[in-house]
Amino acid sequence: MLDISFGLMLMTAILFIILIYLLNKMVYIPLLDYVKRRDELIAEDLKNASNMDGSINEYKKEAHDVITSAKAEAAKIKESAISKIKEQMQDKIERKKSLLEDKYSAFLKELDDEKKALKDNLLSQLPQYQENIKSKISQL
Image (cartoon, rainbow, N blue to C red; front, side):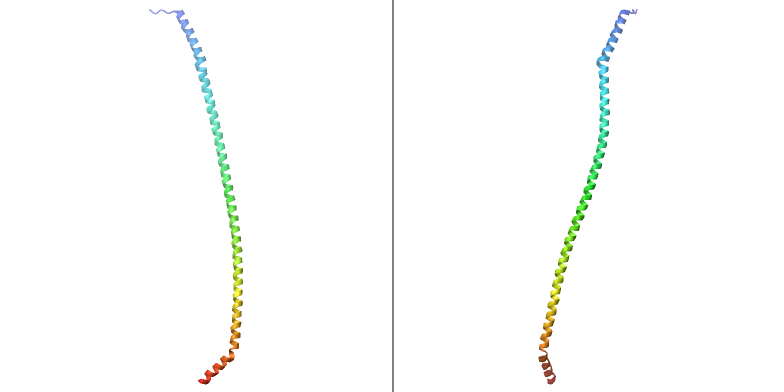
């Protein structure tokens, strides 16, 4: 029935061991090396991504600081411009006040001069008015 051949069995065992050795040498070791390198690259990429996260946070903080300082500087420039404009407007107001005061003084002086001239005119014509009044009274 079944006949076992030790020579064939030994030959099969030797071929099997040679096949395992060749597969190990040509397929499994390079495949394991590839997987190991891939795992190392993935770990390195994760580490770089983690570093990038830190860098991104630093850049965000730096951008926030720049924006904050720019806002402060803009507020300072705005305040400076406003104070400068206020000073200029105050100077204009002072000049206008002084001009108006001068005009007012000149107007008062002119008014006083006209008052004196009118008074002098009335005083010079007073005798004539007195005579006219006496003549009107006498006619009554």
